[in-house]
Image (cartoon, rainbow, N blue to C red; front, side, top):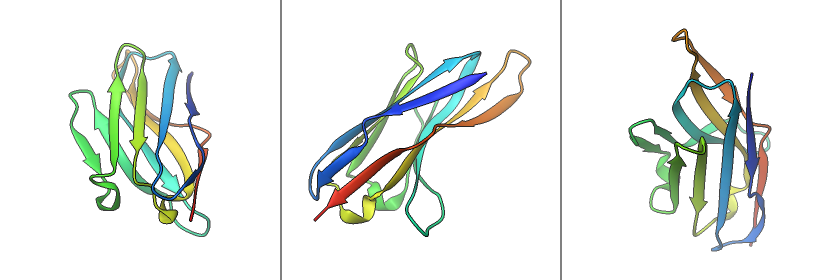
Length: 120
């Protein structure tokens, strides 16, 4: 099986920065996509940013210019650098990975989530 372990959430004032990390471990043949979603209370889960194996990147419009996603393929880790945080960024941030097995099948995995709270 595969596990995704997140770290780096916390409480920060508006305008501040946080860096999230998510490390994948287990039976991994290759990781096609890694990324971050978030879910605020009473709202649907939404994509924040994703990065694929050739560094194609996709951001939600509201975080463009403030958040930066990157990955370390050796460590099977994805990072999310969040700058100029706003109160509306408050949510549980969940790591996501689309991982291929040796048979060629792909599977989606989710982390447990890490809380990000931005205070005014």
